[in-house]
Image (cartoon, rainbow over all chains, first blue to last red; front, side, top):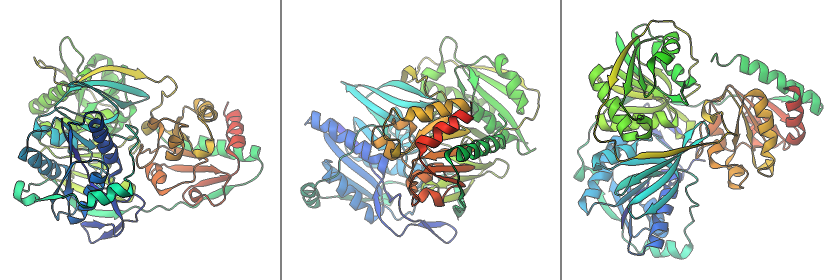
Length: 258
Length: 315
């Protein structure tokens, strides 16, 4: 089985993010593999563990630094790694999907494409859908359970309001992983050393895709301002509870008029 | 006059409050008229409510003999056909799981720009506010001319009544191909009827809860006030709560009127998921807990004493 996993190189979620200029947003600190993509990679690699004949290719669209995330993918069990190199600061879902699809079309078509359901930086949440549309494949995202029997996939996703959907679709397809799908493992030191010797293929984005507008422009970026000054509630348990009850009643009355 | 089509979401036959919020967002401008795209449902049943919030046209999208809700690709194709037929200037929906999924499919199908989970939308100016980097920044984006789509984060707009009269237009959708994806079943959890991302009040538990059983303390309190119950990542990792309850960067983003964090230390990642709450209350036994510098009200105390005492008072 040919499996492709799309991984993104993103700022660590604990990083401070600073804004440079009107249209740039740069976090000068640590970059990691997008957390949701770890679940995607783990699922792909676990399929390979069951079926040794499968091949897992990790693909990432990003700048030269993204090679680090691809090395991590190799250390975690990917057989091949491809970097679609671009200096575009925060590529949108349209451009990303176009690049990923172009690379997938260079080789034989994948049977299964895994992605994370969302990235923790731009949070567009659309790349799997746009990718699937270009490839002409069905797509399901935010899945928290995955079962494969031949070409039949049975997956589950949270539908909201405490309801879980059980969904059936068939290979070939695109699947977006969500937290809870599995437990991603960490790369071991030996696997990281071994991964260093593996090649990461590099393809310039401009060589395979013509740039096109995402359909919107960035007007400005605003930093979030978190200004809350804690009023500490003191007194006995009973007094504190009474104060809380009052606050809850007032605050929720000021709230929604549903 | 701009026409904004709002895809209405229903759950078990009832229109979701977040869909009414989306209608209000579109009605904010006198220059925008709202067309409701109602899928699968009987339009006569929902007419009053849709009119109450300002809808002037209800397009009833139904596939004879089947429920589009069970066939995501067919539902998207049906709405896409309605878009081509009625040519709205903008397309929007509440940014719920289902709303985001449906809009993503339609936008990919029609190749139109889409921004999901907007915290503010100005339909007339074609501008949206989108949170990025887990809420650390907000990007103000402006759509190019042409049809655009967006979803609105639940609870960021207060639904407002704005009476109108609506005409109902039937749009029967016929296709021989129901698509490649089938929803085989929906399992509902009777203990979690209030959706976290749409709740007005949330009671959330951290690792200090100590066990899954102890979450009952929060459930009991929550039931009294119609609140939803959430959990921190640490609590979920420890097995005290399922992933669907997780609030935070790799969980759900919530925006309630009141967020009560019990035994939650208040990491950046957790805060990212609830920082837009109107009022944040923290109950924690640790005076050094980071959450005390990020809340509106703090109670330095034992949640196992405070929450039951609160429950008693709320009866």
